[in-house]
Amino acid sequence: MRDFEASRYLGKWYEIARLDHSFERGLQGVTAEYSEREDGGIDVVNSGYNVEEDKRESAEGKAYFIDDRDLGRLKVSFFGPFYGAYNIIELDEDYQWAMVCGPDRDYLWILARSPNLDKAIVDRLIQKAADLGFASDELIMVRHETPL
Image (cartoon, rainbow, N blue to C red):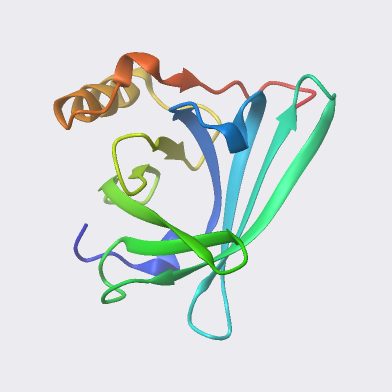
């Protein structure tokens, strides 16, 4: 992703869809909030409603650009010195939705600025994910209704 503007990406995002992975398993109403760090990185707060435990959980992390700041390619850590890839592979020109993947095709998220994203956009992103080799048929659609 070239011509990335971190300042426009900051703020709150709602998870629309994701591939299953252990650190978000069972969560609904998932959001990610990004804010600028004094050291040039980005603070990350991910939260979601744990349906089984009937409570909201959150995790705080930090992200840093791997290359130039105008590339949507970062490394993110929630667990000390261990970093994972955060690659923005599709981004709305108005920064209203994004598709993000990890270091391989096991991690994929569709994010939006609101809890609901137009079905035509979701369908297009799911098709793009399939074209890129992601298991798009395994995407979990994330609910955002109350009390989440």
